[in-house]
Image (cartoon, rainbow, N blue to C red; front, side, top):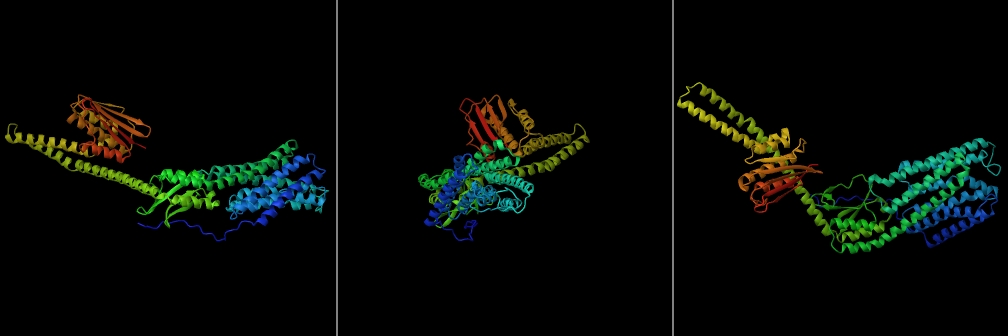
Length: 588
């Protein structure tokens, strides 16, 4: 047995990032204000816009939230690159609206950046929450998106957006238009592929994500879907509905950073929930209550506490069952330490890795009150081990019973049969009135009686009828041999697991034996019923009552057998009112 907890250790190869200084925050915020003002002036100065106020509002809605949300995220979470990426996306999107400019050079720059915003938004959504594209397929997707956006440059050279295009070197407008349509289709497809990655991340192998995080990922997916719809509207030339689709798309895409800010606020509030956690832990909670309290503090219903049990050299869940940390669920594990010794692991959604202070606070608070829960988990683990050992003992006993029954049948029983036959042949060779013949006949009768007793003994050791023909046939046979009338109700030809059938058989046999010896009953009733995943066996009689499962070894042994299978045995036996025995045995 080991005494050291094997813990997964994450080592960072990069130094911790620092939050932006106040000057950087001021410069970025001022730049955002200038960008908003510039978009408004650009819209009202443009001769191409019919609704400059609405266009300026939608442009600001699409850009400013990303700059603001990115700046806040950069300030609060400097270790994540997502804030910087969002700020970059916000400012880069401003360049796309230069197509409103009356100056041809600015107009051409705006056209050159027309596919940059959807690609940047795709990059931002897939980079959540670390700011890095973690999987190789996603990196390929983002790289392909930037490559597709770059195709605008050769399209400009071929004469796209002429005659205002100052980069045009040739007049191949048909080829430029085909290239643009290709971009529309490719960026649409890539956006839909991004949704597929987000959905896979959302489901996370069936594990429930935190509610705030799931809403955020959903908003990203909806935004990408609207981008794809808008681009395909441009491909098919749906001019009649293009403006409503454009407004709806801008609205959804601009809403995503606001949802992100809400999730960020909830995360900040989560630190305040540590105080509530400390209050909950002050009542010395049990394992389940502790796990629920931690889940509330982290706002993560998938939280699971794994307790290290040195005597078992393994981790156990709140029910005392062994748990493996390497379950492939993609969750993160944070050690819980008491007096410098790791005593448990906190398994939580990997999205919380972006909130190290919250995780550390909850882990520290949990470590202060985990001792009682750990003792209870260890007790449950020992009970689980005891339950398993009882089942193994029961299986070993059954194998030994089967072996003894087979040995008696193939050994002593066959020899007695042979002896009886030999005595019969010997008696036939003697005169009928011989004294020796009489003695041989008496010996044959004794052999026959011994053979019957041996068969009954073998049947008691292991009822072969149960294994060979099923519980119903075996119980009908027992009822036939009983000393009082016994009625069997509910016996069907359905088979149950052999341990269940044997337990039910021994229950009925022991009950009928007690009835015959002690109850003075005139009749008995045996009832079988399958209720959900359990076999219910009831034996009742009209005797004098007064029976107890706690006295004697017969019913106590049957009760142990039932409990070893996860069931229970109950006896009601009021004096003068008969006895009712009921057993519930799980059957899968």
